[in-house]
Image (cartoon, rainbow, N blue to C red; front, top):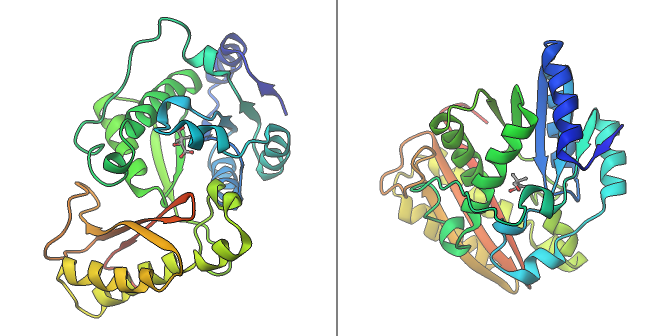
Length: 284
Ligand code: PAF
């Protein structure tokens, strides 16, 4: 499986696939692939003729240099795991190739970028939207695959696709979890074994929120208060936010209407973890 670094080579391969009428599934990642990514790649392989996975630790979406430099990296093992899951090509550009000297065009999804992750990490979503728009232009995917764990990011990408008329079908896939419930994330590798065990309490809090909604609780604030109680049981956790929101606008729901999204972000030691789920009318 080729690992393509240069834009001209990628363009040539994509151009050839398009000429032959092949469908392209695209899984954008920052590497350190885990089971969550692999499930997206497998799904992309099921639904498309050709699967591209990008591996690019996007510098402009990090608000802290220490977060960028400590982000786990390992292209060789990523390539092996991606190929096993059905990837046909890895696109791993350099930062200089995507942001050459003189680069000055950014994409802002204005309102959806403001709350939650946007407030905690200024400039983060501008970086995400800009790189996703660039990658969509370069890869020309038929379908693009994102995880539901990053609920705000997935919603923002949906808006980006609509607003900029990208001919891309968005597939938002369920969160893959470790056995204790912790959502798979590249950042989990930065947790100590004890932190990793304790972090499964985030899922307990989400489940508690979902349970209350299913039992008929409709006061958003009461639900998030109860979830905070569950989260505070995790030793050494620092809660950033917990919210029950409208999945379309991401605005907090005073009175919960379904479907509703539950979002949570916490710090475990020096690692920031986010998780989320959607509670819909469907059972389960
Ligand atoms: O979710 C991620 O890994 C990143 O935000 C993405 C979508 C690959 C953009 O850099």
